[in-house]
Image (tube, rainbow, N blue to C red; front, side):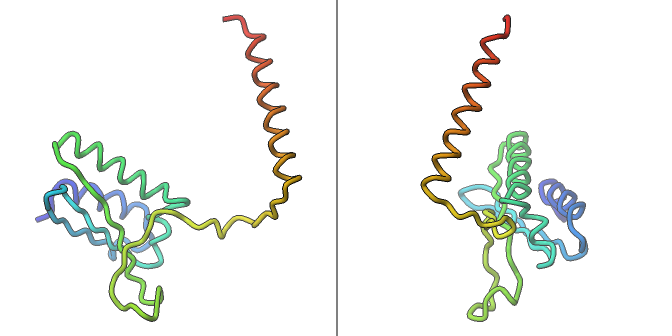
Amino acid sequence: MSSIDQQFVEYIVKSLVGNPDDVSIERSIDEKGVLLTLTVNPEDLGRVIGKRGMTAQSLRTLLRALGTKNDARYNLKIVNNDADAGSYSSSSSTTTTSDDSSDQPVEESTDEAVENKESDLAKNTRKELAELDDLDI
């Protein structure tokens, strides 16, 4: 029998992924609180983590709200069970929720480019401050 927290996370994750039958959540309790271990199909791992880890962070925020209601501390662990992740390890490993920015183009950074960005930022900030000064509050 699964608890309300498992059902809650399962419902949300199954709504996100392409393979909802592969979603499994294990629950364990220790001195630090309740640990929910989420395992999904390797193809759906990116959807669950989200860009820059935002989806995973949102899940953790919702769990924190549920924990406030139930007087419990919840932790969510997302497991990467992809066999192709590394040839040296056949066991499951935990994924991090930070996303590498490989999707975005790499920009060459020079001192001149940094100075131009800073001066553009300063110009925009001054412009916004001038607009705020014109407001009658």
